[in-house]
Amino acid sequence: MNFLKSMAIGLMLLTGTVSASAQDENIYGMANRVGVGVGVGTEGIGFDVAVPLTKYVQARVGLNFIPNININTSANVASENEYYSYNGEMDVTGKFSRTTFDVKFDCYPFANASSFFVTAGFSMGGNKLIKISGHSDELEDLYAQGKQYNIEIGDYQIPVDENGNVNGGVKVNSFRPYLGLGFGRLIPKNRFGVRFELGAQFQGKPVVYADGVGDLQKMLDQDAQDDISKFMDWLQVYPVLKLSIRGRIL
Image (cartoon, rainbow, N blue to C red):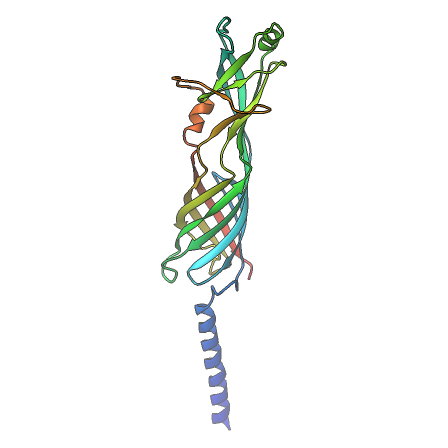
């Protein structure tokens, strides 16, 4: 009787061990886990939710927020008429902010041995990346005298309106493909983990626009040196650097 009891206990322990091993092997089955993350980096403050698709591939959706970052600079003023000129500059402010929605897929080629991953996907958000504004009382008075002026941003000229105001900015593509790599699991094997990511958004060539104006006048044979035009030089590929804390809720 004791022998049978011992066998039963042993069988129960063996079954539990096999079951636990099977669970370990299938810890990342199709959507059988849920991970969440909070991160900070060049995309701003980010939140995302992730699920596994296979042992080697995990998917995530997320939101990123960058609050307003002001770039205070000055822009050259150009006349719209060759018979009058203006020797001076206008102080302008470029406001950089964005909110993006992400869909990305992470591949772990060495899932058993390493948390190294490569990732691909896309980000979507508003196409107005930098909003430019400025005001000049002097140019407002000159406009009343029939003298119209523009400010020079990058290779383009943004008109000064009848109130001495400038309103425009820089646009990029709303849909931005993404590639990256890093270390850390979207869904930690334990309850919490840390993740580092380095990548790039491909957002297309920046375009200068003006509110209420169609095609802007493009300058020829000029090399603009204002801070905003320098900032535009590297906007075509937006660098992504992110550090996040991960948690597993299932």
